[in-house]
Image (cartoon, rainbow, N blue to C red):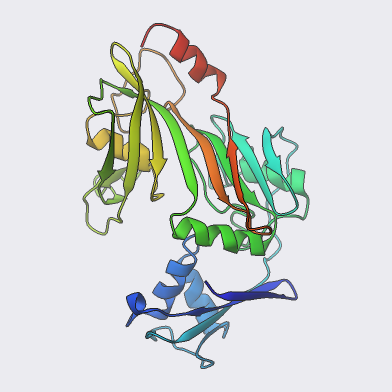
Length: 313
């Protein structure tokens, strides 16, 4: 990892290029270092002079080689045009650097067309006031990762840019613990296993992801069975990677879509649930300030508990 410092609200870090990035474009290298920021974002920083390669100003098409020192300055966030809203939060953990919340069903993580209010960002902006990271500028302050609208469970919110960068680096290195609980359709025979399949946008339906498509990225999901019922299986999943809809698309790929996942499974569900039966139960990471391992668990939501106890699975 690189060295960092704060300069008038900005964050400056320097990274040494290793052999695995030999010949890579500078924007591709930086988007690998900062997995939650886009290449187009870094193109803007290159044009504005906020990126150096071994103390020289690069072009947008410049490449890096082993041993280069890449310095990048992430500017302070611009004023956001998102309205804070007094929405109750189920807080699992909070300190000066991070906030971990238990996200409920039917809550979008950050504002987007059609969902400009009632989001997690609206809620945490009210709760944290000015204490949020600004790496994403006006789009999604404080958010270093996300979970789907109808997936419940633990989610990290960063209160400053340093925490954001440190946790984003851990996500990139696959060292963040992310364990989920879910109920899938059918009986899974293996007690445990691992699904390895690239995931990318489904060319036939832009709302879906799909396995083994062009430009897909590696996806790795570990799983084990907790309990088998007559027609369903209760499972735990651990993410090695964090692709969009990863657990949902991987389980559909092996013939066991998540219960009530109308996007990847049957179009109807006899339980009349609101979206897929999936819960982000446990998240663990090295605390950005102390370096100590912190692990937080979100209890199963009531609907999930009731379903397991119903005798109807």
